[in-house]
Image (tube, rainbow, N blue to C red; front, side):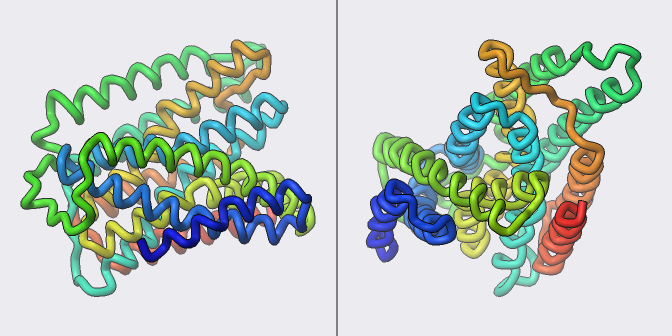
Length: 345
């Protein structure tokens, strides 16, 4: 309730955008309006996790958190900005796994020497991400080595990724949910609002729509700001746009980590990245097919290498089911290193 007054920034941001205010002012107002929306999303997610378990709560939060990103990507794809869309996909995965997860570990480890989370759930997420990296690596290799580069294999790979994602949901929510962090309400340590499932889902849907609207304004202001600062498209897409798109996940993951609920923080960060790689990217490929705005899975060499290294690092650090603030520092440091590389690329 303390942050609800900041909802006033939503009409302010929309008005500033309507009257073509300077991009940096629109950016600040839009970013401020996302803070209370993320707070409401956190409360709804925590209520659902209390009733349905951390797996379902984390999945819903990741899914609805990615909804604005999907909407923005579709809008950009229809405008023919396929390279920026691919850069934002790679940037969102890197941002979630390195920047958001790293800051969550730092925030959660300030008052605790070690935080524990479900090892099996983290292992499943990192395994799926490794599969996604392979799926992104093969089209790039095929494109650069094939005698007929016009032949695309992105559509076939996108179909496989969608099938794997669907099966992963069956595995985690049905057949093996007892291994992946399903706990009783007493074990979740729920201290937030005790909302009903209907109210929590309703709040999540409304907040998602609001975030989608604000994110559209925020994205436009970031693009104009990037042009004013003379930043490259790669840096703008991978760093700026992805950071903006991950703002809600960042706020919620840090809050859950500070409450020693790393299962939810891992579910938001790793789960969001998995969903982007296995579902959002393939869906964009299919949409491009039907709208004649072709989008392939041929990412740049820098992006593919960065994704592969990131997945290996995260898999290594989360393999023991424990985290501390120094691991978070390492993840954020790797993100900054990639950012420097992109800035001068």
